[in-house]
Amino acid sequence: MSATWYECKVKYRKLDEASGTQKVKTEPFLVDAISYTEAESRITEEMSAYLSDSEEIKITNIKVANYAEIHPFENSDRWFKSKVSLIAFDEESGKERKTNMYLLVQANDVKEAYDNTIGLMKGTMGDYTVPAISESPIIDVFPYFSGEEDEMERIKEFTALKDSLPANNEMDEKLELADVLASETE
Image 1: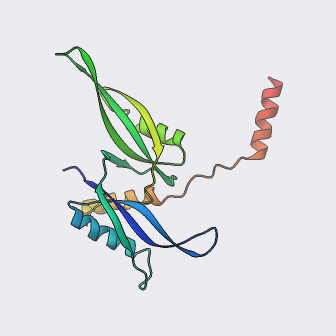
Image 2: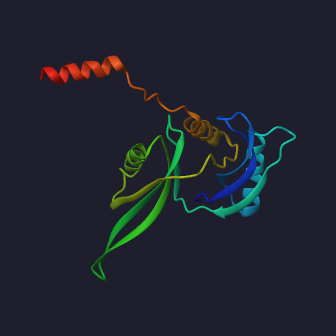
Image 3: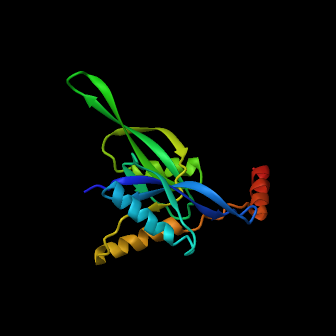
């Protein structure tokens, strides 16, 4: 059975790291659920871990998200929506038909999201294109796990990937200087 993802917009008090004050924010989260009622229950439960006992949340909107698949990646901190067009040839009409699907892919930037999307689609038998990738406003993703033993390994793996820290992309001046000097001598 495939997962149904619900996008839940939640209004709550969040510490603004820039100013150090509490601000009311409305942010979207994604939960895997069977119904709107379960989505509301699950987002309330998941958000309680981020709040103190005196704080409350307000769920301002719940809607079914149109993601075919969700893919966390290690050392990534943002979510990107990848539009993938599957190309099929219709033998009756003799025309090409495109079917769009959307993937939610974790990455640090658009290029990395594109690379991750291409990596995910490698095993695809048919032709496809990736016409669009955009940063998603989704803050966090909460998949459903039943708690059975075989799923406990999956939840650990998913959580480890989702919570991993971004890779350090700072420039190493010694290596840069070595590259410049090497290219000058060639």
